Length: 154
Image 1 (spheres, rainbow, N blue to C red):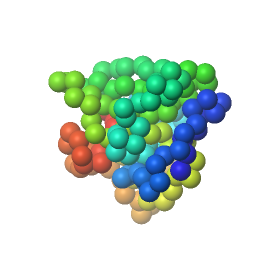
Image 2: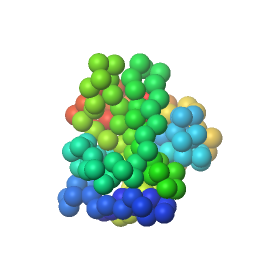
Image 3: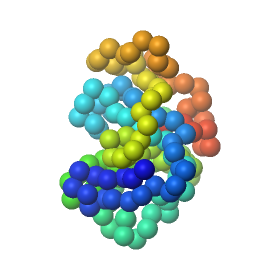
Image 4: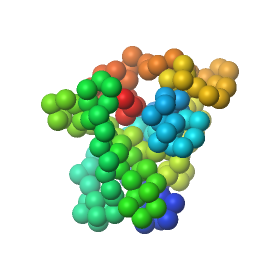
């Protein structure tokens, strides 16, 4: 798999055998705004596949930071050239970064979309397919701090 933005300034391979722990289609209003679409797709990876960021990657990324409704902070990384969102990572109120990173599904070449879970379906503006894993808000496994493979949503 490879991460590539729209203009290809951000183009890097993911380590071999480093598939995501989960893939989520999030229907919350924040993800809809971020993706400029009906939902946002996130693939959850261990943070060590990208962090610490290399100097070259850091020079090509912008970062917009926003507070979350749960009192955390979300660092939202995007390509400085084309503006495409690449990933986001949550920091706890004490400043500790989660050990997972959410890479936006649309920038991952070779991502397997099968079995993606739908979250925050209470806010959905499109029909959710039948027989998929779905939650009106968030599954309990996503509520933990780190190491649980949770979505980087807040």
